[in-house]
Length: 413
Ligand code: ZN
Ligand code: ZN
Image 1: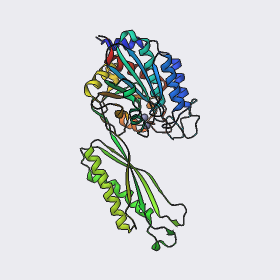
Image 2: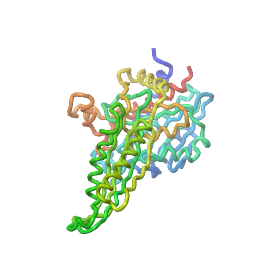
Image 3: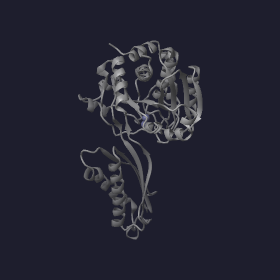
Image 4: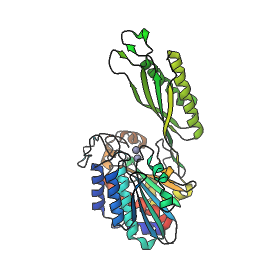
């Protein structure tokens, strides 16, 4: 016995304009735009929302798009897609590969925009089957962690209805056609940390007259590996990655400065605080040991919050996905170490559900080495890889996940 929401979702999405949606996806993929510069992408989304009958606004929080469809009494449901691409040079070899050198939709946000446009269209066409208000959001600058906050700071909920529930979804590696739901913590917090080491520069032939920051940076990178392994309890999940190290100009010049950039992933504030304190202590200790003329500068930069699904909302959406696609397509992956700024869109205490749609083409998945799911998972191109290439076959299902999730919140019973 299927629920009303599942039946309606199947009805409303039975005749999706798949050709037009795939063309939309290929077009967005060809024309990626970096964070906060999603002008063309925003225009395309806004055009589709207007055509579907939404009151539409652009330029919210920079390049954000908002579409509102008021359809009688009932809750306000926010549907969100992020729109930005990454500074990655595409290596997929796809016929619709990026035409912008060094910029690529390597995280699947082009797919998210397509899913959102498709779901917004289907829900508008079937508005006699549900009651409430849809708030459709094309969010800029997810990758920099700024976009959601910028939209809220620009009066998102003063100018448009305040949501009672928020829904978001993301493309992920894994055999296309699975829907990953966790009824609680699903994504980790992320914190950027920058360290500047001050040495004393000089001639490469006379190290005795210098304090070499390159050597200190090397020790520091190595020593930082002990933060997670030696200072964080095994029951807590955490990651510390040094993603960037920069110093020097020539073979024979000892530079006066070195910089390293770190990404932290944590799932509790206490672990985050402990890691930041350990990083400061280790940086100061290494610089002291090296005889640096000044203490290092340790700067805590951009951060992303934890993403914690409201259990009841997520279970309701997961249940309808199980009805629409089959219960064996829905699974709980547990929390991931990746991060999202989606929670910044949720006003305090307002529930949300955020899930993943696996999108690796079947033939790529089959060809990946390994027999176990996790081995293959590690082998196929993931988000941010220059070879990340979601299967076009996921365009229609991603529209159905969003539409059915919405109907689970809004359908007339
Ligand atoms: Zn990303
Ligand atoms: Zn992403």
